[in-house]
Amino acid sequence: MRIVETNPWSVTVTSFLFLGALGMCALGSVLTASVILDILVPGAWPTPSETLFLGIVIVTLEVFLGTGLACLCSLMYNYTAQFSGGVEVALTDDLSEPTPVAQALHLMKWLHVRAWQRLYTRLPVDFSHTKRLGLQLPPGRPERKAQRSGPAETAADTSRYERQRSASDPGGR
Image (cartoon, rainbow, N blue to C red; front, side, top):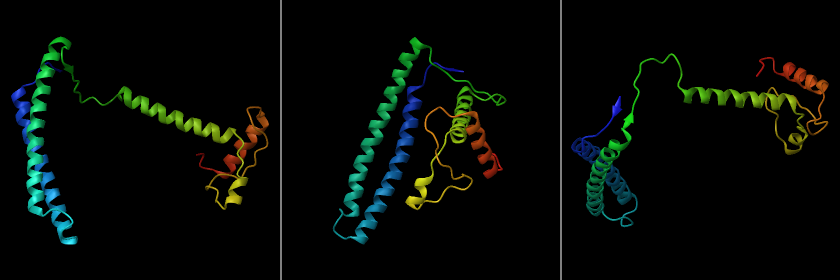
């Protein structure tokens, strides 16, 4: 489905109704806050009638300016849609295949988990500072001391850390 043009009058009426409802909610909130503040701290805030008058003025400006802006945006969209062809919207009920965005998010999550697992199992970690600071080790993490730093670890070191990890964490997290 391609949206080639909008009806400026419909956009104007709809935005007027939405902004009017939003303005009523704002007036109710401001009036409630004004009454509560007048009860708690008399004289520190303008009276509720003054607050209501100022709120009505601001909401009226907001409604009329917002409605005019929505109408102007509708007219601008109609003008630019003549050159670009409008916006194409795809509506479907078929959810059998995930969208590319969902696939990318799933891949990013999988890569993050895999990188964390590889770093955790392959790098020697020194937890000796945790005792000095009075911290507790997270459950399932063995206390290890770093023997060497850098990428020059051997296959024996890697298998030893993997054995420690599997012995302390039978769930395989």
